[in-house]
Length: 633
Image 1 (tube, rainbow, N blue to C red):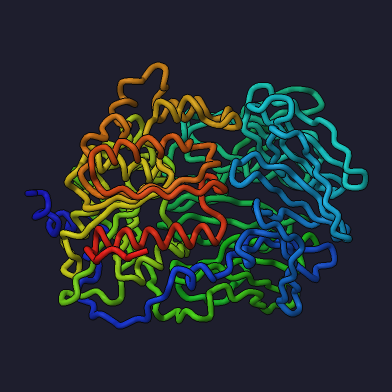
Image 2: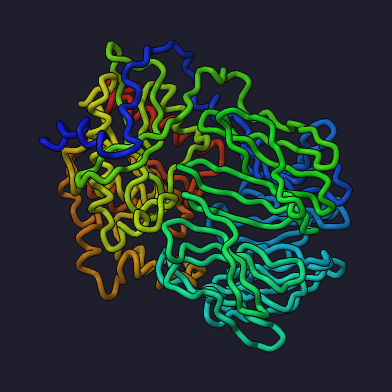
């Protein structure tokens, strides 16, 4: 406990530490139901039609994702598909007509197939092999064909195919015998970028000439390398790397001379950089302390496009029409779901096309997250995204949750999360910890959990709990932990390795037996299986350590109430993982609630299921953290 008393002193030494604003006065807010929060509309994508009169998007307006067209003139959203089971994810309009591509899997099993729907509504499946996975890679530069990866030859290997727009016939472009990860294809279709992961950060980057068969390595150090785009003449490759640096920066490689040139860097990761179709604009995105910063640069002049002022919200997901007259983007914050906008590049002017926040919800009742930092057990500053309920003050202490993201290697970001906002609205403070091993804070920080999972990164979460307990508006006896996927593992690891740290745990499809999970990874993960083993451990060679960190084998230590949520179709974390930990916890006699969805995978996408899952999470926390009486059924 002595560590707790050093917080104020350590924060003097560490830049960016925060006390969470304990001096703020509380505010009354209206409480909303989870159904109201889930009645927001989630819109994704936005492919311009050939005549630039509409955008193709995915929307869950009907409770499940379907394809919609949004009219640019009116903002009217018209459904194009009507699936009531598996989600439809729209990909792109065809370049010269109103046909469009979309992908579907089977209720979350992640074996995606590609489909085309024509102007009459007729749907044709393009990749019908039942157990083969397909992935859209983009349009050819001449727009007469598109590229896709397809594992029909071997479920572990994603070969590259080209499909003709006019005939919808496909031909093999590259046979991927070595399970490379796939990158961009050059405008002349002569070169393809390939990558071979070494670990979850470092990789080798190659360019393979499809005509000569010659493969050239672009990477020149043990570091991360990721191709982003070719120049329009195909003579240069743009890529990101962290070679010799903490953060990713933008480089250019000239094939003829072999010269490398650094183009842009910052004190954060540059996440992407790509050109518009005609090459007149470059879009550059950066991950800045858990938020997105986007620049759109006019290549000839070097000038940036001036976005309107959206206050605390971020601009992201930028796409420019093929004729470079229009640009679509989303505006999102931690307190507002992303809305779709279109900007006229020729004449100026911005049009808002969606209003995705449920009109029943007053945005003033929602909480804008702040970035805080707290010292961990070794004085390392740990960043976190923090949501403080508006009703909280020293006279109205609230319960709190440590939120753990997925991964390993993920990041909690300043984006809208309806479950988080719902819990905060119900009076729970939420600290989304970006423990060591999280991306976005430099490669040294990112690699700190390698072969150390469930140990030092878990202590970061425990010390996040200590930070919460020191806030004078938090009830220190009512702090729980919640997370999904890798975050779900961290929940169960906390309940088994630090059984007194948290009062409750909510495990959303989390790994509980690493030996099984690592032996049963999906076949389409073949390209980075070895890299995953390098980080986590090889289940055939490092079984002792993996046994030690697997919560299932230490379930006798569970003493606190636990809730487990799982999708039966999950190919990453198998249902048996949750079945076994639930049974083991029940044998201990602790309160256990298990919620299983037969029609979900690794992540719940159906609104009906989300409403059930999130409402049950809140009810569980109300009983076991707030100590309210259980509701009678």
